[in-house]
Length: 206
Image 1: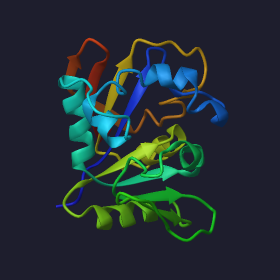
Image 2 (image 1 turned 180 degrees about the horizontal axis):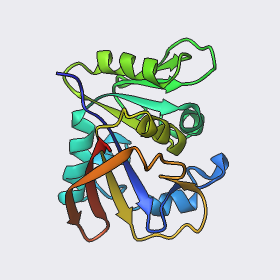
Image 3 (image 1 turned 180 degrees about the vertical axis):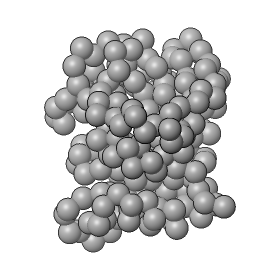
């Protein structure tokens, strides 16, 4: 059985998943968007932020996303921002396939993360990620343009949004440029916690 391909993002109430400027990707506004995650015990353990943390539904959801993911795919913009911001032990612990025009040897990090640089487009990156994932799923990690490219190509099976009580006003919209005439969604679940609302959908062709 083929791996499920999914994405999972935090989104502001006005539809943005990141600031417009790459220099602000790990800045104050982005941190506010992700505020629900950082107190979680699993996140603190994964990022080496120290002992303790919250254990509840948000923590279970983050852990479940991590445990189902056998490989990830991301765009060059996300990689460039994360390369300087992630800890030495990058928080993926799987193979990550970076869609890029850059020619570069695989970059292996402590803790099981290896970044592979794919120059042949999103489908080739996905094929390689499926093979690496084995029986687990493939996560399209971002950024927004990469998620949209996979979504418009009909390559996303399902997705989840953590809708945060934050307003951006401008930035990277998750669905800016989506081919709405070809894509239909079915809501699977909606769950509210004290910090965010978790929305889950499956994706179908119209």
